[in-house]
Amino acid sequence: MTVTIGRRELLAALGGAAVAWPLAARAQQAAMPVIGFLDSRSPEALRDRLRGFRQGLAEAGYVEGDNATIVYRWAENQLDRVPGLAAELIRQHVAVILASGSTAAIFATKAATATVPLIFIVADDPVRLGLVASLARPGANLTGVNFFNTELAAKQLELLHELVPKAARVAVFVNPANAPNAESIERAAAPAARARGLELQILRVSTSREIDTAFETLARQPPDAVFVGSDGFLSSRRVQFVQQAAHHRLPAIYTGHEFCEIGGLMSYGTNIVEAYRQAGIYAGRILKGAKPADLPVVQSTKFELVINAQTARILGLTVPQALLVAADEVME
Image (cartoon, rainbow, N blue to C red; front, top):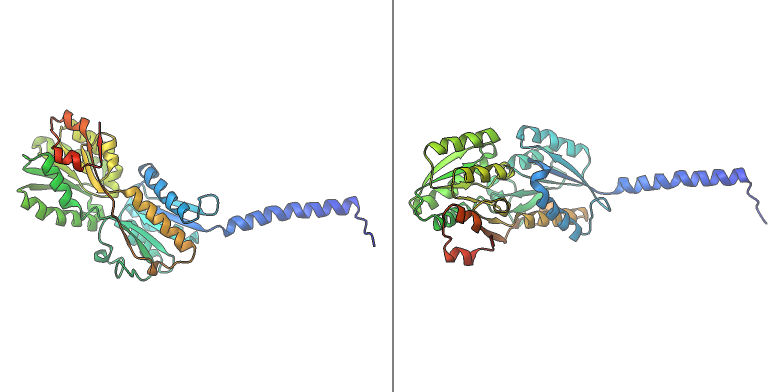
């Protein structure tokens, strides 16, 4: 039997299909997993790190905007905003959250949920901080990456002393708003300083104005060198630190190569982009069903020594051959 469809019926059928397609597309989009990204800094400070995170996510099979969505929340170095931002992400029904930039961001997210998987990136020992039960078996809903920078304070002082062997007093910058991190740096630096006969002058800064004030204080009785500790806020103010160190002609060591790229003298620390790549891989594995409790905390194994030879010449420093050989990169 032949069925004849009139023009009106055909248009109605096509109209129904036209409506169905957008609905199907919206349903597919709604089913796309959502990743929460919470950082205590601003996006401008994390350009390379975001690239690393997206690379790791892609290696695990997820591409932002293709088959995964990332919802970003930035505290802009205002740590009192972090709990509210963490709560916002929970309300977004995210499948997993990455928290980084400060222990405040991590603990605020941990306090906000006991069920949503949480990936942290932290410079200090996560077991000592109480984030996880152990590195091998984190337990609960947390796992992440430990990039060791607070533990490297002793090595950084050693390298600084090797470059500036006549140094007797070193000014150490820490961020008191990131208290566990600051305490770890001070604890690691103290014995290393005593072993080399160095006097440490601890400068606690948590705002841009405090950094300027601290350098004004140093100008009255200049130290022999400066050490800027590992911290999200301090890293976000790298232009300010490098400019102040240059203005006061102070040799300085930092924790990331990005300082040297803008004229900083020397840096030693974890390859932080690699740490974010590892976090991206873990985010992808969790989206595929892995439980954070079963994913061991990743400990960074890539460390970089970078020396800016041009800055050394400007400061009248001769870089020892041993340091040049050991350096992963010498910038001219």
